Amino acid sequence: VSETGTSNALIQTDAAINPGNSGGALLDIKGQVIGINSNKIGGSTVEGMGYAIPISTALPILENLMTRQTRDVVDDTERGFLGISCQNVSSDISQMYNIPQGVYILGTEAGGPGEKAGLQKGDILTAFDGISVTDYNGLKRTLQYYKAGETVDLTIERAGANGGYEEKIVSITLGVNENTGSEQQENESGYGREDDGGNSGGGSYYTDPYSFFGGMFGN
Image (cartoon, rainbow, N blue to C red):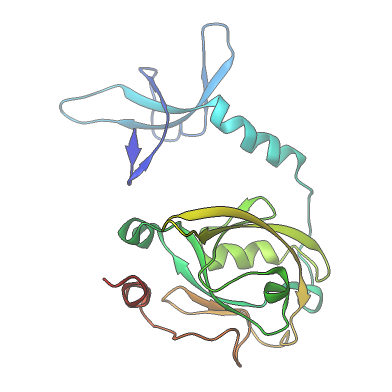
């Protein structure tokens, strides 16, 4: 089944799925959970066609949630810092230019954590410490639970020689943001910076992400 351009393996069921049922368990005749109810198709020509996420797909996520360390929000003065400038890769842009959805790295701060970890311009950050990253706001929300000095794994997609992207795991030791008195910023275009001034790695900045990626990929 394809949803918004993404292919998903789903279980088709004729069990009644009403508004508010999404996230509920789909059971077999033995009472065993075999899926998580997700959505249904309705209309004048079809009725009762529901879909559930297979438990084999959901189980690794559930296990990760159960074993994940509970964290408290860290004070601004102790909060970890990546030292990157970035641009969101939305789902629309991902489909338009055939690149992974996530946070596109425009550059790294000289001598900062990102540069030391080997992050490069053009890398796309897709997960932080096993937590999915789809945009800069989500990354900021995750970072508020991590202290400077902690070492975490980043999942990135890096452009390969064949024109595609290769997944890599990069370990990074979070640094201290020297500009803790200023807000971490992101404007409406989805361009985010972890500081409010200076050169975080260079590159041309666009108010419109479509213009940015259009210029980057030639459309």
